[in-house]
Image (tube, rainbow, N blue to C red):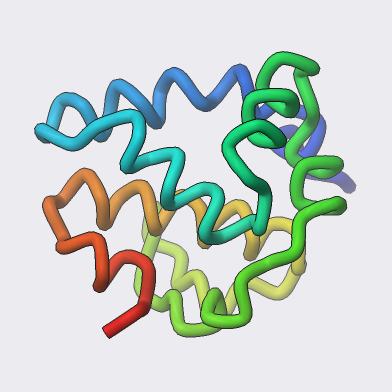
Length: 115
């Protein structure tokens, strides 16, 4: 059975990501940088996906996942992201984990796995 999040639009969840990071003193621009780093989309493409109501399934289906994404480890909602078996769910969890790290004040170079 397909998980409900797969058919949810990214635009429906995006405002929650924005409010989560802004509550912790981070910016929407930083959030967008994290999303574009993970997916390979540029700012314009991200905006188009949000405007078009693209589902998570299609959003990640057309993404060019950053090769460093496999370095994203840890737990989101009690689930270890590196142990998620469904590839799409794992990509969604990668995004959740990056948003969490950003909101927790982790330096951007660490969030983006550049150091």
